Length: 440
Ligand code: ADP
Ligand code: ASP
Ligand code: MG
Image 1 (spheres, rainbow, N blue to C red):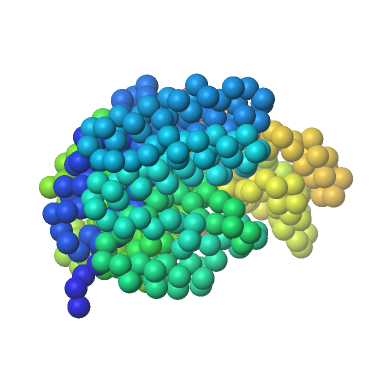
Image 2: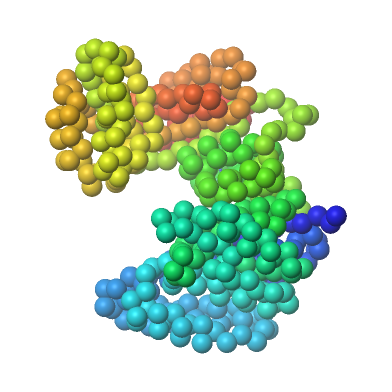
């Protein structure tokens, strides 16, 4: 049987006509690339605006009763330029009129936001001479907003396998009432994974603007090493913690089916990129640490109570207070008489008073200490379990860099160690950890 590749191209890979030509050359160079998932045009240069952001602006202007026609005109002009340069016949005005009409009728933000990928995919399908398949007809959400996997996989499989080649817009699907719902930002990666899974692809290629997953954020560490091979679990850990090259949820659909993901660079298609699979190849050089990632903007709520360890359900009650108020916790390191809950600062601040009141009333703690401006940094690697001295090396590196570690949390699967540092020490810590754990 012939191999099938699902290839997703990101926003920068399709930002203008010359990028679309590069993507088309890649697509056409291998007939196994049968299903292409396209993003909306992204930034062409660093101060540029993504089409998706412009569409969100239109929606914001419309609900504020402002005139959105200027913003919509800028979007039309960008697409018109792409269409002209690609030399295709495409009626952009009627597409844009439909968006304007919906905005006037008070649509939710998801519909206009989805039109970036919708129109771009139609343009690309035309340029390739391929079929366009609307994501709203093959990707389904349930009423509570989760993916209806069974319906999606079977409908997409049936529809797509009947076609030899197709372009599918990323980022959205439809709700039971037929209206459009988007994934969270960067969600075209998730669409690509869903499509790969539905057609039971042999490979999910994710084409972007870097030659793979880097072992640290390239905006902080100069020329970090590329990770050639990484497991799904490590990748999920790193992307959740902020290595933003792939959407953190993109791993799930393909992982269940064992379909590997290959991150590749549209601007450097000969590079091998990063291969993501269930396990590392046997012959790979052993390593303790695969990558480092992190995020700023956390708050730690430390609750102290003597004999807490003897009080059954204390931790559960505490976490329920956060959950009941819609504030998910990120980490929860515990001591004998202390428990800390690490949460997103912006989320916590909006519920601060009620949460603190409930903790005081329901749990009667001795002290509550709140620390803001906390960054969480994860050092991730499946080899950490079997490599002695990793933690010692990590803390030595931070101490030598003069960083005060404010929180430590080791995941129970021993795949990662998470440290909390001051936001001001964030960049310095990432560089020190990279030098000590990965570079050498
Ligand atoms: P796309 O538009 O193709 O979906 P994204 O902008 O979502 O691309 O993701 C690629 C970007 O992720 C890179 O340009 C890079 O700046 C950023 N990035 C952050 N951390 C990492 C990392 N660890 N490895 C690779 N890229 C990273
Ligand atoms: N265009 C969407 C965004 O900017 C989805 C994506 O690019 O993956 O978030
Ligand atoms: Mg992306």
